[in-house]
Length: 380
Image (cartoon, rainbow, N blue to C red; front, top):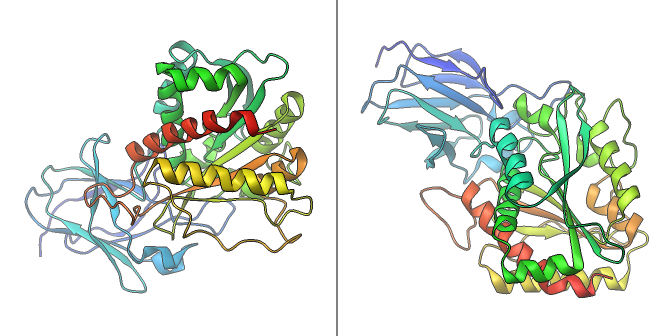
């Protein structure tokens, strides 16, 4: 048994862990902390210091079986990094109770996380890049429960007759791949290639890179600082419980919506897929055709998207109208999709080193912009 003075901490942006017993480096006992005012939990992010290089260290998340998506641990591997820049996967096992992973570290400190984190510091950098390098404007700024900024960016001039394409990300704060996706959008906007120019002639992009900054900062999986799941708040949003959604709905009413994409991550399904609003009471044949067109085009463009696996379709008239995709699709009768990326990997094109990653999320975003350019003329 290795006796060492391990330090396990999470007192930083998006940190989440409870240390139960760190006295034995080969059997560190940990637990994931639930979201504030909510029973949800799954996201973890912690730093381990004082490790012995080259010696085995093992970590056990003892309450994994009680998490929000406990079936998701099967086939999942934890993410790790020595520098918070280069992330890799650590083989992990779920025995029905605890998620366990081990390694012999190359350095005395390491970070572990449920997925490659997207920090608030990087978010601030991304907004600066959007404004100063990508030609976007800060159209409006909302405020979270705890007063953090929610930026609404627009790429385009708002001229009459242009299509209004909305992309929002990270309503669920633990789904950090969503803001990596938004970085991919903004990086391509900086390049301003011919395909993108053609899209922007006909459409303006309305971008919300991060919907839930409070939840992300506190290491939540699903909810904001009031314990509210923002993607279950699109019919009953209030300035008190869900000001983040309330703000975006107000802005949509001001500017209009011709296409909507809500970017998420899925815990269980090891593929990229979309969910649509086929269960809406006012679902139209045009929406159905546009959904099929989007999926076919993106499938043809990249192996990182597929249509075989996803959520069960809602029965006609039985959609949950509190979901953003359904609510916006019903209100504006437009193409309205939820895009889901995996916490695990894309089993159609696996990467044994990184699994699904920030880099792959960014690459997918570039392909989505290509598809939107191909479809812009038929969105209305």
